[in-house]
Every structure is written in C-alpha cells, then in structure tokens.
Image (cartoon, rainbow, N blue to C red):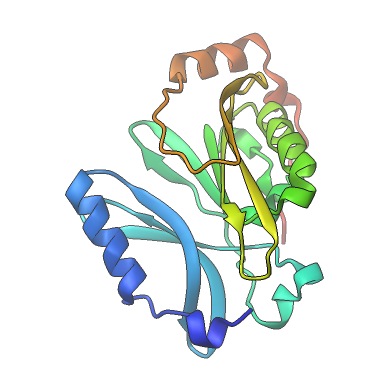
Length: 208
C-alpha cells in the first residue's frame, strides 16, 4: 500500500524497461505496476508492443480486505487487444473473482491473461476459478502468479497455469519460478465453439 513511494509516472523506469525489452526481443511484454497520475494511484497493466506503442488496463476490482480501495482508484474500462489473430483480455489478480466483469459477451476474446499476486493460503480458489473462467467463457485462460515470500512473509505458491476452453491443463507450475514456452491452438478453439455453441445462449448485459 506504499503507493506514494513506489508509484511511477507513465514515463518512468518500468515503462522504459518494458519498451526496451519488447523492442529487443520483438515481442509483447505485459504486466502491472503502480502508476501515479494526477494525484491518484492505479494498479495499471501495460500491454507494450515491440514498436513502443502500448495499451493500458486499470484494475477494476480493488481488494477491500487489504484496503486497496483507500489507496487506489478503480478502472472502468475492459481492455481487449489483438496479437497474431488472437483477441486477448488482460486483467489483474482480484478481477478473477468477478465473472460478470469477465464474461465473454459476443465472443469478445479468445484468451484471458491474469497477472497476479495471489497468496498460497487462497491457492485453492485460484486453481478453481481459472478453469471456471475458461469453461464458462470458452476461452484459453493463462494465470501468471508470483512465487515466494513477500515483505510481510506471506507465501505465494505460484500455481501459474494455462487452461484450455474445455478445462484441460495445458501448463501448470507450483512453487518454482519458471520460464516456459507452450502453444495454444486457434483451430481447436473454433472447433470447440462450433461443436458446443454455449456462448450463443448467454444473457446479454452491460455493466454501467
């Protein structure tokens, strides 16, 4: 919650690192950080492209149990980005618990990415909710979580994972930092949605 000390401007060192890394490796780099802007603080996800252009998503759901709402300002807009033909919905940590916000209305996305700081003592929730989001939204879901003890000695077990639209485990890692490459199949996603067109029967709604 020490946002005043740890927050950075949009042209700060983390943004520069993301820009340089994306350009160096010719890839998109994404993750969230504390942004200080106009006397407010945001947990802001950055989607940084190799050419230096980027998109932003501010965490929608603030963790009241940890008093985040006293420090941070909540976002109001969902972000959908495109990469190599994939429509991607990146979100942050606690957002995972809110299926209405994440509902895949009109097949808006094919892949959800969740970056998180999710403690081990609630790891069962993490491991349950990610497959639920994948199955109900007929999308791949990738959850990337920290590993190890934080500054308050709270342990984080990682449990980073990729789940298919059918609920199958594509990748899973617990208790270890890892760098791993895996493939997801767009044709398989289309096949699942055609064979089981559940999204066409969903309720139509908007969050105001």
